[in-house]
Each structure stands twice: as C-alpha cells, then as structure tokens.
Image 1 (cartoon, protein in one colour):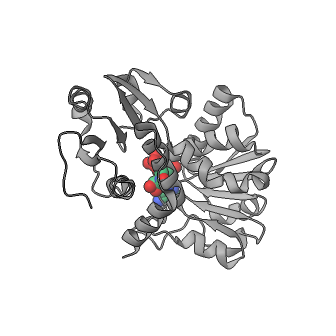
Image 2 (image 1 turned 45 degrees about the vertical axis):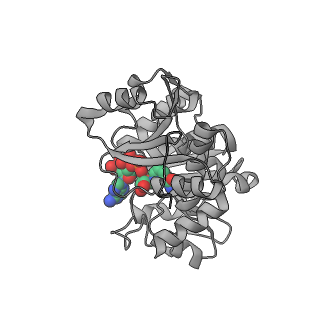
Image 3 (image 1 turned 120 degrees about the vertical axis):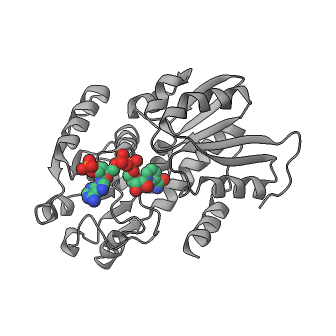
Length: 290
Ligand code: NAP
C-alpha cells in the first residue's frame, strides 16, 4: 500500500457513518497502486448533523471527489449542484465529482448491477425476475433492470410489503414500468414465485456477516437449474442463499462483482481512467477471505 504522498497527490474519500466496515478505501487505493496513479482515498466518519459542513469542507479543500454511504445517500441530493438522471430517479447518490468547485452527484450502484448482469442479458430480457428488498440497493437494481434488461415482469418481495407497494407505485410513475407484482417475504408462499423467475436477486442485508447463517429462504425447492441467483451481499462472498441455489444447479453471482463494478465507475468518473477490474477483484477477495 502507498506510503508516500507529495504536493501533487490528489485526494478522494468516503463519507458515511459508520464507515469502518467499508472496503472502498482498499479497492481504490489498490487500484491506484496497481496503475501507479498519484491519488489517495481516505475514509471520513461524518454524522448526519455534520453532513453539510463536511461537503463544504470537501469543496473548499479541493478534494477531487468522494463516495457517499449510509446514512447520507439520500440526504445529500439537496446539497449538490447537479444530479445525474439515474441518481435522481433512484433517489440516491453514492459518488460525487468535484468539478472545480461544482459538486456533481451520480449513482454508480446502477452501473454495478448493470456490469454484473450484462453477461446474462439475453436470459433476462423478456423474463420474470424476483427482487427481494425495497431499500436503496433494490432501487438501483430495479432501475438497472428496467432501463437495461427489459424483463417481462418484476416480483417485488419484501419483509414489509407496504414498502414494496410504495416502490412499485414510484417506478410505475417515474419510468412507466407497470409490470410489477408485490409479495411479502414469507418463504413457503414464495417457492412458486421464485421457481417462476429466471433471475432472483437478494437486495436485502439478510445473510451478511455476522449473520451468515441467515437466508431469505431455507427452501432448496425455490431454485431450479435454469436460474440465475444474484446476492448483493459480499461478505461472505458465498452466502447461504448462494450455496442453497448452487446445490439445485442454479448459476450464482456474488455481491463482489457489483462492489467492484460500482467502484470502477466511480474511479472512471474521478480519474477518466479504467480500473483494472480483474486484478482488484482478486485482491479484495483475498483481503475479505483471509
Ligand atoms: P436498506 O436501504 O437499509 O434496505 C434494507 C432492506 O433489507 C430492506 O428491504 C429491509 O426490509 C431488508 N431487511 C433488512 N433486514 C431484514 C431481515 N432481517 N429480514 C428480511 N428483510 C430484511 O439497505 P440497502 O442500502 O438497500 O442495502 C441492502 C444490502 O445490499 C446490504 O447488505 C448492502 O451491503 C448490499 N449492497 C451491496 C452492494 C454491492 O456493491 N454489492 C451495493 C449496495 C448495497 P424492510 O423494508 O422490511 O425493512
């Protein structure tokens, strides 16, 4: 890891609270090291009451850009100069570019989803998809699906069905996609919904460390060998859900891909350069698993 900075080193960062669990500093600094680029990426723990001040500070100090994580992804929208179309529709910003004092907000989670699923585009277009979750990550998933993959129908499954209903209404109005069904996350009833889906996406935090024994379903019969199952959780990389789906012969995709693809898009927005995605993926996988 880099241990020397000098007068020309460009600073990037991450604001959130808490931020100790974030892998973004590792990912970006590893990529800068690999590409011999003179940048440094630092985490800044910023509470809600300090958000406005922190953003002003970033701008005044000439920080080139920063990532935004929980709990600021939504609140920051009103504090920026420009918001990309996708960040505006998703309703969340995770990347800010400081263009000579003008702060521009983007949502690169959408690119994370798109980059991860692109290899399955033919399977997804015209098919039924189940999305579990109704939070910020689910919104990025739904936006990417509708804009880039054109599924025939999306089942929105969530523990609190009311939130899935609100999401359905929101996207129906915003991007005129009406082919939604909502369901409560109640496993026995879900088997048929899942079995009828070509793609199942877990966009909840269920299964994430330290609760790695949890899964959105325990029922192996929810999956078939013709399906793709994508879990946004990236720690652990092989979640209980993915192991269950894999046992039934389904194709499984872990959250690490999305993490890297969203980071790669932020990297490109800040530097104009491509991130060495495969190399970084190997590095972060080793870092998480050891
Ligand atoms: P969020 O806005 O807080 O939403 C959390 C979602 O999970 C809600 O739908 C919530 O249901 C559901 N949930 C939480 N605990 C649950 C439980 N015990 N049982 C059933 N449902 C539960 O969080 P988010 O920002 O959308 O993030 C969701 C997950 O995606 C996190 O694990 C995050 O790390 C991951 N993520 C990964 C990437 C990546 O690059 N791989 C990027 C972004 C996010 P209710 O509505 O009922 O509360």
